[in-house]
Structure formats: structure tokens, C-alpha cells
Length: 120
Image 1 (cartoon, rainbow, N blue to C red):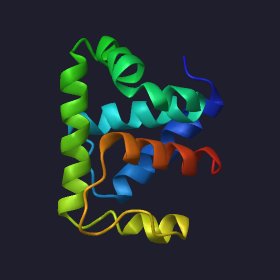
Image 2 (tube, rainbow, N blue to C red; image 1 turned 180 degrees about the vertical axis):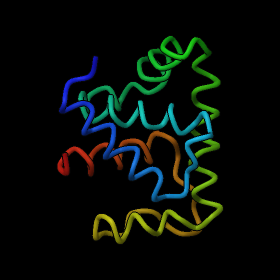
Image 3 (cartoon, one colour; image 1 turned 90 degrees about the horizontal axis):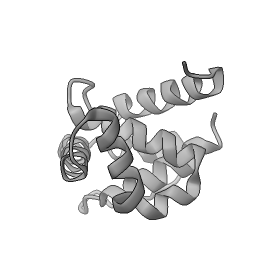
Image 4 (cartoon, rainbow, N blue to C red; image 1 turned 90 degrees about the vertical axis):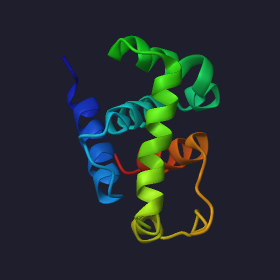
């Protein structure tokens, strides 16, 4: 069972991802949400995406870390191709992502986890 704080964090993260045009029917949506929530709860884990976060999420979903990484990359790319990453500028009041450069998984996850940590 989730604590109230975790449930609120998950809702905040899910709402933010939805605003970026990433659809909940994409497997990457769930993987991305879980990565960001874990990054909010344990910021040091963001330095260990491939050795800690991806494997732990893969275990939860009974899949491989490679599939987790690929699905997250596809979800981020869907937001990028829809030109939705510019909404982050409005949401957080800073320009972080260049409109012509798709962010890496790590950069994207760390940015959202860092910004949302202070909103929860």
C-alpha cells in the first residue's frame, strides 16, 4: 500500500508527464513515472540509472532493463516530436531543453525529479 505522500508524488509526476503529451497507454509512461518518483524519493539513485533504477523497474514489471530504457526513450521522443517539451519552460519558469535537441533519458528524468521534488 502506498503512503499518502507517495500517492501524491505519483499523481504529481503522472500529471506532469500527461501535460507533456506522453500517453498513459505507452509502457514508457509507467516506466518513466516510476523512475521519476524513485528519483524524487532518492536523488542519489539518479546517478545510477542503468545499474539501479532500470533494473529495479524491470524487476517490478517482469521485463528487462534494456526494454525499460528503450520504452522511456520512446516516451520522451513522443513528447519531443509533438513539440511538447516547451511546456516545461512554462511549468518551471526556466528554459532548460533546446527545441532542436532531444534530451537523454538521464537528463530528462533528473530534471523532472529535481523540479518536482520541490513541488510535492
